[in-house]
Length: 306
Ligand SMILES: Nc1nc2c(ncn2[C@@H]2O[C@H](COP(=O)(O)OP(=O)(O)OP(=O)(O)O)[C@@H](O)[C@H]2O)c(=O)[nH]1
Ligand SMILES: [Zn+2]
Image 1 (tube, rainbow, N blue to C red):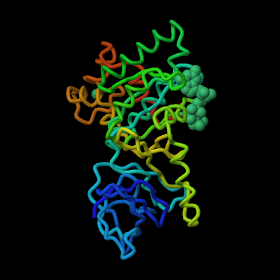
Image 2: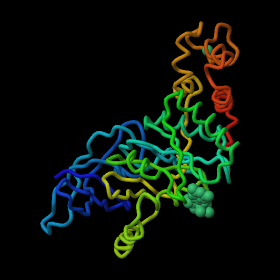
Image 3: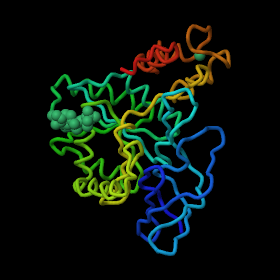
Image 4: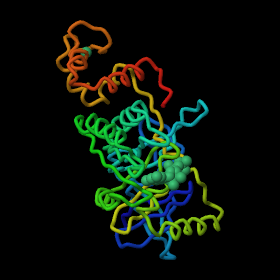
């Protein structure tokens, strides 16, 4: 049978099979990934093949289907091991606010670079629309323009007042979506608005605890009433920083990457080189100054993330 891993507790995986049933599955044998050492071979979002055991309710995973992408967390010690947090994400939503507390452009850009590096399409959702003053709405327009021009879709909502929530519901239908954002931005409020019976769902977690297996380190996906899943685990609400070679950084700013083909030197760093098409585009306002500043800041390693 084939199915989607919707919860992982380290040794047991909850697999939603094609027949619509959920099975508790284990792994037998080794699943290794080339290139990285991982603490968990299989993560939520993975598609797996499994055999049902005789009891008809548990299964054994025997194949991991190829992933289109995955996000990882490096272990804090120096063991070089990484934990795969989720796989096969269709979209990463970055929830941002212009009010209490305001999300900085640097924070947004760092998130977008990470999403590009992971190959996960990103969208921006501006929350707390109900709090925006006239000036706030002007700033919103400017922010949206910066990102829409590059190709990142932007939406505006109020999770609290329910403004534009149906638009987001449509957007995430039949997709696996990660919702991220800094503390206080309204992630819980948005997730509650999108998953009205979430409390019932979190109840399922205790079933697992009864077996003594549940650990919160692993991600969990919540099924949307209209189809699709939200990946939500506190640990991944801020997409981790990943190592990017300096020379490659420009690849993850789509507008810089596109423009860099016209730089005089093909190894141009876009810092102070003669004939740099990126610097010229910044001067001509074809590339937003804030985006270029974020590029330089990450390039020089001055990334405080805020
Ligand atoms: N005015 C207004 N307040 C909101 C909105 N969405 C969330 N809030 C408020 O913002 C605060 C933080 O919201 P949460 O949903 O807890 O934010 P969070 O991102 O989950 O925060 P963490 O749990 O710290 O990660 C709460 O006081 C919410 O009531 C909104 O659309 N408008
Ligand atoms: Zn250049």
